[in-house]
Image 1: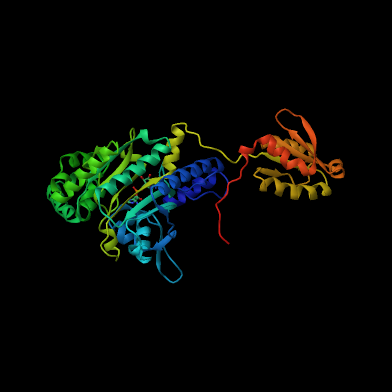
Image 2: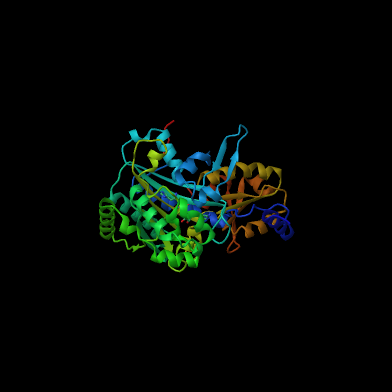
Length: 451
Ligand code: HAM
């Protein structure tokens, strides 16, 4: 009997070229990169405005970083991690999410001596051995942010506000509802876990296989199981809100007041527990208005115990992350188009070695002047090169042949109307700038560096 994996490989190989992407991963083709670029810009802009600095942690960490923080009983750690040994037998894991690595870095780099709270954001790829389906991949991208060092419901409100603001900038906030809950302090949760165990005692037979296993180690997860029978039981199970301490209750009430001040609508959802073990108090997710939890676009919450759990000083924190593939799917669903800045301005065609010698510095000059230029530097006939220029949909083609070399000139052809004129070689760049318009030059500058 072939294993699932063998069957997948066979199916893939029968279906097309011998080498294809591995199951659950995909190429990001140029068209989709326009969306990634746009989303990154929005995230960078909004995070910068709010005082966040960017961080990148390594693609892999020692496995314990994730096991300890996300929790052994979570689906991510128990089923979804890409874990391998290096040549010295150390266990390493491809990052399945961003918070654990950021917390590890906060402690390792002594960020507790920086002005608090430390506000960090990231835009990275992550890896989970999830069952591939629409919106669920084995390599996916997230943007996320973490606010580490202070605890105040106003900070949670700001994190939620920023998350919502970014979805709004991307034109998709209206497709989602903000689901909000408090899962209390770790002590509240222990009490609640016990209440759940007592409730489910004797009802184990009605639970799905997954929940039967979770009951002992992580009973809170039973509340967000998607199986019909488990959901029916979850509805009559004890409620977290009845097991919150006064302090947790006040914290949650205050958060809701601040959300009100910021004009953020939310739905109180007592079954929202999130799939990662590090949360305390506030948890939230953005659910699709039609699919519900199935394709949550993002989620986050407070994790006041995590830094201490990972070996740092007791330090409160909260954060959020959203899935970029899911964002793009929703932007497309809403028919949102993003700026496309890759269109070429000019195609340079040439005939003969002498012409090519003139073309090379001209192409450099055009590009340095912010003109997006493609040169046909192969050996094709002029006709073939012009056909190529048509395919690239360039507005202008510069043609240099034997005559133009002799006369120190170039032909500038308007591809849309088919007219052309001869221009002195040293005026070509100016001529193109005039035609494409000063404002359309691609003069992006990374800013001044000091050398
Ligand atoms: P998460 O809910 O596991 O939270 O993931 C956040 C988002 O990443 C999800 O809502 C979803 O959009 C996207 N995502 C997750 N798995 C996949 C997948 N297999 N394929 C495509 N997209 C996926 C976290 O990761 C927490 N670290 C969030 C956080 C930050 N909490 C505090 N700070």
